[in-house]
Amino acid sequence: MKKFFTTLILCFFVLSCLPADAKRDKREEQQQAKRIEYLNLSWWERYQDPVLSGYIQELYEKNHDLQIAALKVKEGEKMVKISLANELPQISFDGNLGRTMRSSDQRFGNMLIPSYAQWGYQLPLTASYEIDIWGENRLKTKSIEQQLNIIEQEERASYIALTSAFATNYFNLIKADKLLDIQKQIVSTQEEIVEKTQKKYDNGLCTINEVLNEQKMLTQQKEILNTLEHTQTILTNQLRVYLSDNDKDIKRTSCENLQLLTNIPDKIDSTVIESRPDYIQAEDHIKKIGYDVRIARKEFLPKFVIYGQIGLNAYQWSKMFNSYSQLANAGIMPSFDLFSGGRKMAVLKLRKYQYEEAMHDYQKAILNGIQEVNDSSAQVKTEQKNYEESVERLKLENQKFILMTHKNEIGSASNLDVLYNKEQHLLTQRDEVSNKINYLISTIGLYKAVGGKDLYSIESSQETQQKPAENI
Image (cartoon, rainbow, N blue to C red; front, side, top):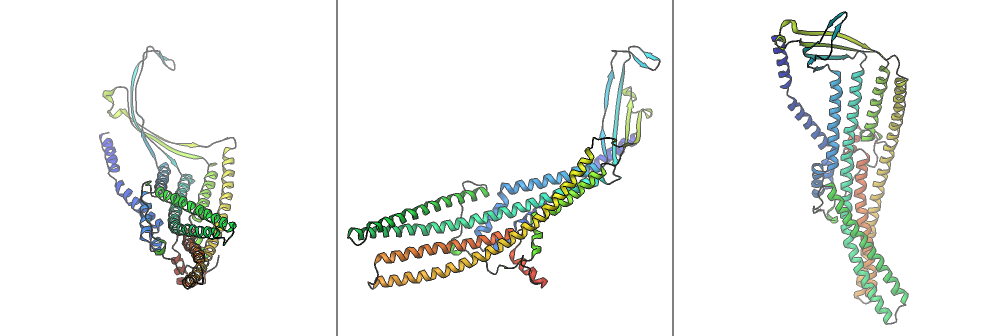
């Protein structure tokens, strides 16, 4: 008996000394490496904006949504561990220390013991293990592992969505800054136009309708100015929430210093959607439901549980550790449900319906992925063309403004004509700024549509394979 307890103590000591902390640290390092990969900082550096790159890194460190997504992954890991523990033998200690009081007689067959009283001491270790003959418990763990994969893809999707949304708002804020500056110049120019038109009217050189039209135009431009100021405030507040700091001073690069991405691939192979989180999630969901269907089928089969006890049983504490006080028993307990009211069949049919639903979700994910890549690719092309056209139009307006200035200097045009051309030049500059930022934002949309992959790495991979790109 002393050897038994010595062995038991040694086993518990060995188990307690296992390097669980080292395994946990290694697993945490792997998860951190994955999250840095999800961040894809090398892609954001392609915009050559150190302010944006710094904010993306800060987003990784401070954003609450990303931290919540990381905690959900940890929760999923514990669910896998719980399921794995259910596959292993279970050992418990169920001690019993009690006394039967002198409240009644005790009868053992024909033998009567009046005023029966007795102490009882039981110190057993109870073990049980369900023999996984049909592999049902293993399938349950595999199902939960697939659920963990789905959660990890949800975390990756959160990284792609949040970084893309942050960068989009960042560029929109830069656009709002520049448009606000231009709009102030437009309002100032329009005020001069109103003033000079009023003088013309006072001198009888124009009608009152011209004055009213110019005043009306001034109110419209002021409305646009107010809207831009509101947009600037809203975008600033949103960026602060992303960075979890409502008092943060949001720095940004000027619109003139923004670099455009060039040579974005105009043809993208259809296999790119296989890296999208929703596509991978749909695949993993099919696998999970497939395991659930197999589990539901195995529920119809009998179960076998091995059980046993070893320990001490005595009626006097002084004799607890004697050799004849040892307690041991073992056996196999078969279990089979003869009638369950149709529950098992209903669960099986339910799992089959869910499997069909998962197949439709998978097909839908493919179609949606192809559509989003197509739409985003077309958006990039359109925004690039619009920007190029607006740059050309701005050059033409600049030439017209210079010519009008020269005509004014030689007396061939009035100051009012110069102001009209200046205002038109500012309006064209406003369009050029909008198209430039819209083009940058469209590249972010394409990055998001291809599943957070570097667009240039997609192009290089196609060149390496020396296969013609398939326009999807």
